[in-house]
Length: 337
Length: 83
View 1 (cartoon, chains in turn brown, orange):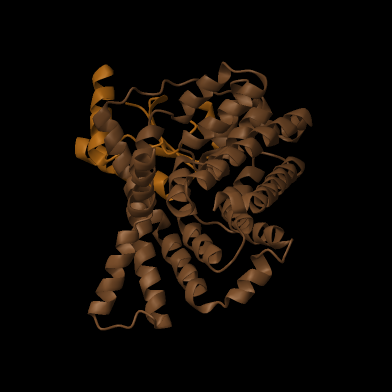
View 2 (tube, rainbow over the protein chains, first blue to last red; view 1 turned 30 degrees about the vertical axis):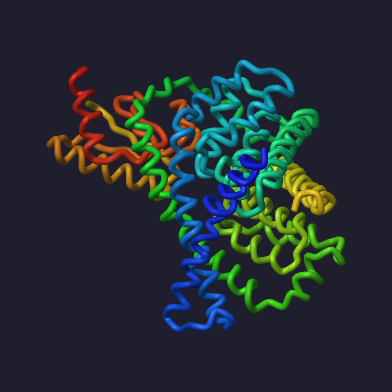
């Protein structure tokens, strides 16, 4: 067992966490005659280390994830969902949300596709909540930064919000707040093509490149903010706002995170730096969840498909869920870290 | 071949697919007009849930991918063979 434990530790800190990279960057900077204790150099070290680390993780992860996703085009997910009933359908929808490639620009066709296939509204929403909130990428990324326990709990709680949220929307009878064109449009089933392994790899490669290009600015910005927090923001500020003394730190973190649009890869360095500076785990994770789950662009898109009342309900459910997740993580922090 | 449609919300990826389709038509010396469908209701009525998608003679031939010019050429050649 002990051997297994140390193998896992190595995997987590060196392979996923890339401690070696930090050492190399440090040595490189010292070799240039730079003083590692200098704050500016510290910021530069953090910046280089984090950009390289996140880029490596991102390219590796997106490739694997896209390969898996190529097995779950939305057309196929729709068919799978058709054979489940009740809360099981919500659960499967939440799980499929984590592996179905989906961008908010396709949310209206997806909505119509699901609805015209006879899927209940709650099931569609379970999918819509879980899809941006938890995905395979966030699981592995969180594992590399915060460890296995936190990563699994984060994903598990995200799935709970998706299932419960979808069920609430279902039980509240919100169908009348869906725009009527969604309900009346008839959609047809199209066959999802059977791809060869080579084609899946090609798709994964394309996805990796296009995702990397898309999220690189967010990574640079996120790491920049992270490096600033890491070396320039006094610890006492972070502790006062997001530490254990402030019971509303989680609410603050969520409210700031919700309207922001960024990729989870961009929020990681900020989260990491805040945690290092004494923010509570719950506040940090609520911030990350808020940023990735809800954003103005995706809400504007969703508004075209649902009426304001349902949109507000969706926002409230997600926000309260994210705040709840924060409090759970704060309560369990001593067990998890 | 009577019609070619690119389905997409007008996003960057959709325009890229339209560009590749145009280039493919040029390569094949065809002048079938390309229609860019941005209306989500129309997109959904084809059963498409991931954009961009390519529709040839009202048949969905690709979804959720920005095809390369060569891939569109292959598809168009295949479709032409059917008529």
